[in-house]
Amino acid sequence: MRNFVIWLAFILIIPACMRAQPMLVIHSASGDHRVKVEVVTKAADQAQGLMYRRSLEKDSGMLFIFGKEEPQSFWMKNTLIPLDMIFISRDLVIVDITTMQPCITDPCPDYTSRQPAQYVLEINAGYCRSRNIIIGDKISSDAIR
Image (cartoon, rainbow, N blue to C red; front, side, top):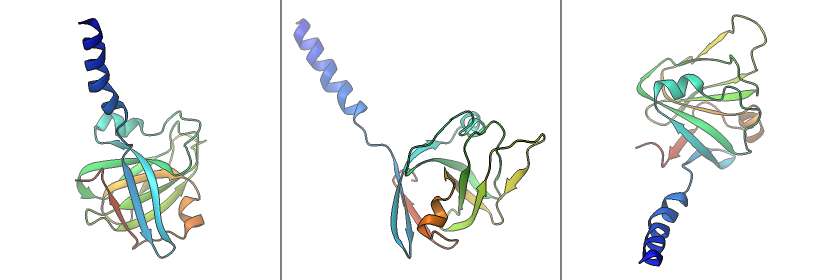
């Protein structure tokens, strides 16, 4: 009986652990660029963002999903790594790209999208420039329903 319980636990737990990390694909003239994303939808998680993290894996980022499309505003307080911010419309089109440096002054400046956005991808600074990702490029993602 004990072996059965261990086997059952193994069968139920392992598939949950093996779920693939959500992906986002940026479709640009230079090709399709795949990014592993950590998805944040709750206000408290969105406020925390990438604060205090010392690094971000290559081709990985944080995808913010907001309840509605509107100008989105971010700051870099307590953020230790430079980031590209990719602002994405509800139609999954990139509407703005901003490179942000860690904040070293108080108060920290705000960075607001020039166009309304419903999604924002934070990724290592220079990602967009190095891959020729531009405003107007489209994205797709299994994290966006």
